[in-house]
Image 1 (cartoon, rainbow, N blue to C red):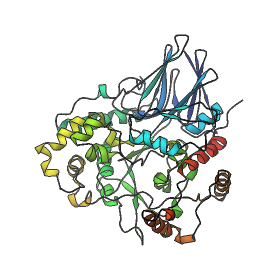
Image 2 (tube, one colour):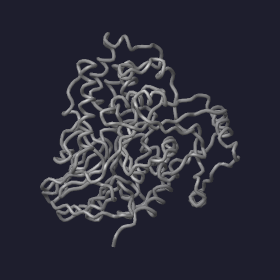
Image 3 (tube, helix red, strand yellow):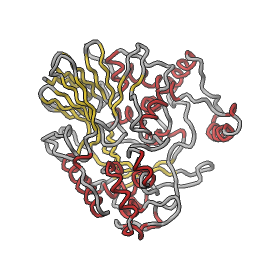
Image 4 (cartoon, rainbow, N blue to C red):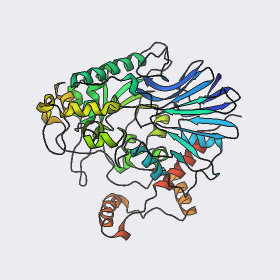
Length: 484
């Protein structure tokens, strides 16, 4: 098969769309996507950049891409669930993209406002074995969703043969001890560093960390130190309704990084359509408060540490769940469209090696981890050992569960044009935004939500599915103009 590429300067930096027909792969992509004669990729992986073997067994992938080999095309997703691919077969063509909005624009398919998109995607993300992984359209055709897996399309016959697989486990050894696991993490980070620093890359990527006072982001930042992180992002939440400060400033300084700190306020949230286009939910708006000044940013996050380093380390979980299963938590998974526009790659550190969750469970339960147990419900010996052995004081992190998610549901885009457009869209579908109460809307929302647990009519409406449709429609029409 032949690969043809065309860069579009008006597209988001990291978006790409593959159109396959008549033994030819045509790819449209943004201006910061890396590419060669037989592959296209946005991100990095734990392996040689020059050889581009990301479609074969590698320990970690951050981002998405495709590789052409003879009559086969393989599409790859991240090691973590924070990125997704979308694909559909329509009118004799096979279309694949790392952006749902882009796929909608190219296929001319329309989302159905009556379909529960946010709920359906959330089920896929919290239960990896959930099937089918499809989204409905007005035209009746289904859009397939790819999470964590690889899709190989074989065009050698009269009909396209597709194969799905999870390719990451075979390249990851079993961990007998904590030292084995820690060495694997270091080796993987060094491989990613070499990939990022390869002279054949056209576009430099700057590693940046997130940091808080919890377990997961400090441990992730320590693990990612071989990348040469010079900047960390942290959120402090203080005030009448946010009675704690989750800032990891002192930890980051101890690790030798400068810190950018912001205060969590409703007025600081931005990019509503881009975040809602991911899941229709508000949880990940906190990441929009920062200015990402680098052209491309590799952002290390501790998302999923609650499973890999605590919840998942029980015999019952390992026996019945996939390591990607997170209960009802989808934080971080709503940034799939946002990051393409901002030039951000989400490196989920706890997911590295997490396919060996059974090994981590045995390590966690061994007597060698006893010095790093603190007892109680918030006890994570593995990340505690990682951080304390780096010289961070025990009292500086992981003492009580805190969160930096928005404290209330967000209904009002900060841009007046977006707000007017959203209101019109909701009215067309028999809904409306809740009443506004000026600066009191956050506390009133919290009060009404609490009352809603006891008095159903007090609960605010759930508009996430419609937010998802509106956002993707807006992004598709505004960001993905197709060439003639």
